Length: 395
Image (cartoon, rainbow, N blue to C red; front, side):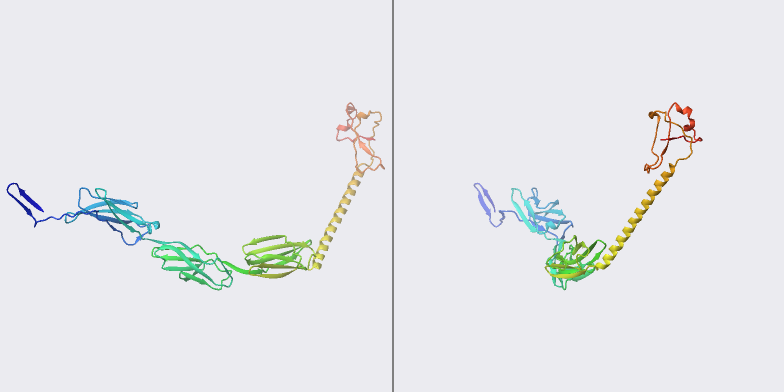
């Protein structure tokens, strides 16, 4: 209240005209405003405001999230002022369920704090098909589509490469076949949709020995092939007439659920080969007939006969060629009337002799052409003149 005191005169209190002053121990808490429907990837602006009574020293704001900050101050009634701080940012999936805090720091160090939890919408992610890893052929398989999204998907679709099968959070597949295509699901919400990876279903079924398993033979061996389709992979056994004696396979290869076993043996080793496949789902046995040995034996004799005839023809032709070659060489060394030259007086060093025929057996006379070195070239010019007869000497 107001009171007046005049010394040595009068004193008075205006008790009916009072002014009430209220002092708070802590400042007001800010007000935090967030728009509805925050979506991942779409920019948003949130605001934080607080009242104060000192426009020359307004409070300062801090935010718990990074972004662009701006502020403005507005005058209110009763001597109050309002300051508003704005934060703009682009939310993501990681901001969902994250706390957002606004803090107003007043002069003197006192603080006002307001916090809220962000609700961010985003399209389905990590869509997957959940089911048992394996199922027996002809059985039933239950599948569930799972996803991470906000809000939760309002539609689930089940599909194969051929098209859509059904809708619903779960899907039941009856009378499962080994030939079923891969299955995937699609999750759809207000923000978008996403597909799962194709689900590879492991179908278990007993062995089946496929058409094409057989035995063939040629002139030297028998080849038997056994083709088995099964899942899981089968253990394969081969035997002939005695089941206790297992035949050793020559080769084995695998292609998915197919196993191909090859056996090779000599002609006549067995009239039949038994192929047995066993896995956890059952077993299967097939008897493979080996081609009759008479047919194989006849073919073998035919090939041997042809080879023998070819060999005899080769030997005969070679003998005729050698004989003709020897006779031709003998005719070349038959003595003919020629100019004879006595060379008995010539020294051994002056003679040059060479063999005429390789077929010489010592029974006939052999004549060879003689060549002379200097100084006889001038005396016997026949050696160097092509139009003259050759000079022969008896050796």
